[in-house]
Image (cartoon, rainbow over all chains, first blue to last red; front, side, top):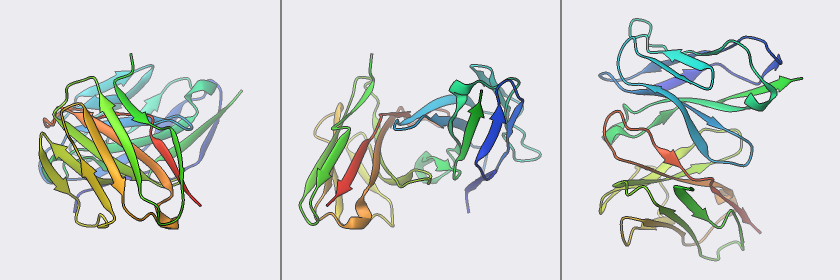
Length: 112
Length: 113
């Protein structure tokens, strides 16, 4: 069935380190792919999205590329900041009626 | 500037006492969703409205109901809350198209005494 698998956390990095959070998906057809970020005590915010193969989504220094051949959508940032500490969710909308299928989330902690 | 507004942010109720959570939106989106999120887990879809059409997920307990009186408002009713219903409840909206993202409110954290 449809699913999203993302790397287990928590991930702890020092400020200015390089970040990669892996995400792979299974879906029928060609879903749109999303990364959402959740700061403590808040709802989810859309970070970036890609709607077709080879599209690159980017926002706030984060990037992810829709790779159909590897069914992946890995999140990257070249230099993380303390303010990037949050939980990151990978998702696709290939569920029934286009509903979002979420990964389990990866908690990122960035230390000064 | 807030687009999806959930009230209240924190709700405390007693075991078995009905509770209603509310969500409003200024985006005029035709789809509204309710999710349950427990600690350190992904959001779990409970149901959604596509315009006035109600769509219930197969594993959503009967204890959970929803109402959407108009485009802007949607309510989540929990008829007899149990301890296992303590969670963050998230409302989201979208245009419902295949590449449309969902816009989330800040959630209501429900505690059961």
